[in-house]
Length: 230
Image (cartoon, rainbow, N blue to C red; front, side, top):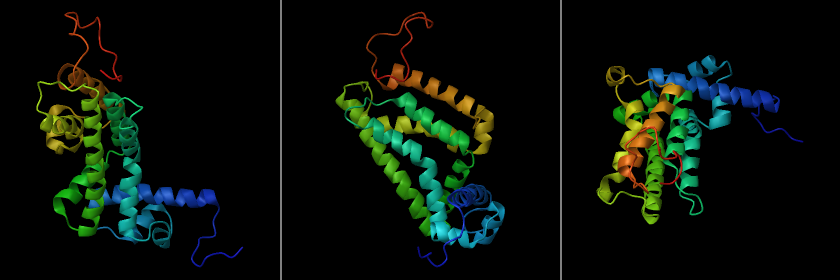
């Protein structure tokens, strides 16, 4: 078998390890220094691999950034896709849990995304990130539409603002400035975030989405089954 020019002579496990190390190193470097202020050489040094591996695995520094965003957000995108399947009832609690677990595993991601969206230092990177976000927003629109078709949306709410309310409820705590997070007690830790998901689900059940019956006067009884369609 002929080996392609430039292909690293490494076992599959070593190649996967090198790629994963580059992803993790780039997350830290990009979120700490910004995309344009960190070189591929320094990223590779942080990852403990040769800088040529960035071009081999990702094509360029921008390709590395795109891989970070796509792969990190993949579980959320997949959950949106599952929820808009006509044979699968939308599950707001599971979606929030998936999103918050992703954030807990990648607490540097919000800072990186905010930097790219606010600074716009690099048009290519800005386009990559907004493309992924646009994809998520389109899926969220279909997700809300699935609730409408099942008549699970509270008729007292303005339909044009439902998606804004849900996205704001889920995303604001992790994208808020550090000062506000500290003042509000926000923690980018899995236990805290999953507790927030439960809290948000209760808000949705009692406000955003219709409920099959009035809530019990005793909050310890007849509590809705979280995670199932309402």
